[in-house]
Length: 304
Length: 138
Image (cartoon, rainbow over all chains, first blue to last red):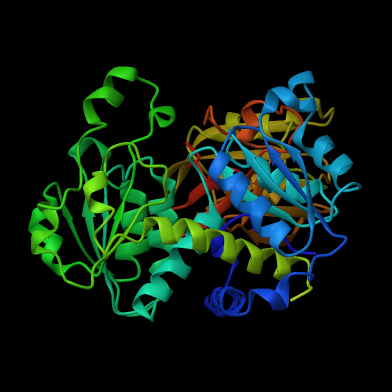
């Protein structure tokens, strides 16, 4: 029985297999409608995340399975002080697979050590969110037809933005990658990621505060939100939240086949005027999130 | 200074000068009822000064903890007054319940009964990270 806690647990081949399976589900959805019949997914969401939870639930329903769970800690036994380990030991008897979101970093790992069914990390605080990264990889693969030889610009909160950290770690395993790290000084990519991933793998990158200076080189522009909950200090949040806003004007120098991604929800970092641009892929990306989760559930339940 | 030789026990040699008390505490040597000698600032050809701990009992020290504190330490096993084995230490791949994670967002900050596990992520720089949240050990 395997769990997915960190995207780095998956080899490049396993990621390729998941992407291939997701593509097959998209092409032949009817073939998968009964695959998880009589199986149950428990969504244990100790902090609210409507999008991720709905995407897991939709994925399970589309596979013919059923869903049970809770969407915030107040409605769970955690409010009474139960440990993560005890909760998942109990839930292991009620469900065939667990998707867990928790505000504390490492909680899904603890869950996977105690559970007798597979556990999927659906986000642990500001730490990991492997199914978002799988979603990003499926989107890039579908939009570009490849996961190598790409210039990826990541823009916004690169300091606390976990989706960016894990996207960089995942994409760094493919050949011919270049990164443009675009952020205000205060939200720069942590130096350990530059040292332990980019420099160690001799990956070409530029770091800039000016989106316009790199726009023309990008194949992918990955925008992120400056998240209030990652700051201890409200003043810092208010000062930095509007640092980078993508508008149609800023896209004038971009490549015609640029793909704009965003893990969503957006606040105002992408102007709604960009939505009509064919290069805007973020709503498609959210849809692909459902398909990659379907592929993952199938793999972990070994019914693929 | 003269310290009696031991007959059956261990000698922890080449301890970085000043580190012996830390090792004494980590290995729980205060709970032993045998003779334990701590020699501080002994002259050393290699290090200039070093600490030595002699334990007059055939205990088996936790080599992972020792290796984590100082991989340069050598562990000499003494039987019947003779040196029978000299162990050289390496940085352990994982340490349990030696350090506590300082990250307030880590699950170990709220679930006190979890084992505190750190993994060696960069052997060259001796970097350990929390197994749960990957925060670097201080």
